[in-house]
Image 1 (cartoon, rainbow, N blue to C red):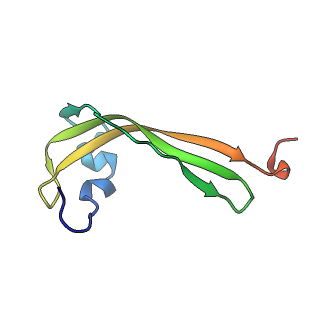
Image 2: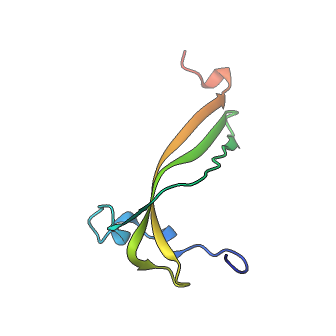
Image 3: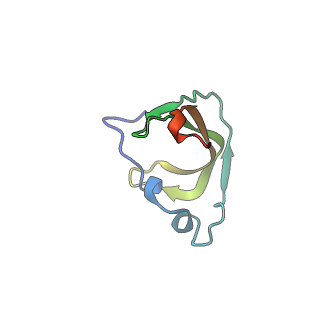
Length: 96
């Protein structure tokens, strides 16, 4: 268990090309099955009056072989799909 406030891993800000050896390919690693999941929607009210919901649905976690952050934690690659739901939008924004 982590001690103190969580710090972002350097891998979070790494580009896929940097993380995957400059080739944009998935890294060598170990598939780590998801045991349990809670996926909540984030809701945004936009200045144009629209309300949208967004979440990322994770498809796969891959623990990258031989890669660790500065604290010694393993680096994970994540395959996910963004899901966007338009809850409401003013009539003036709709196609006529």
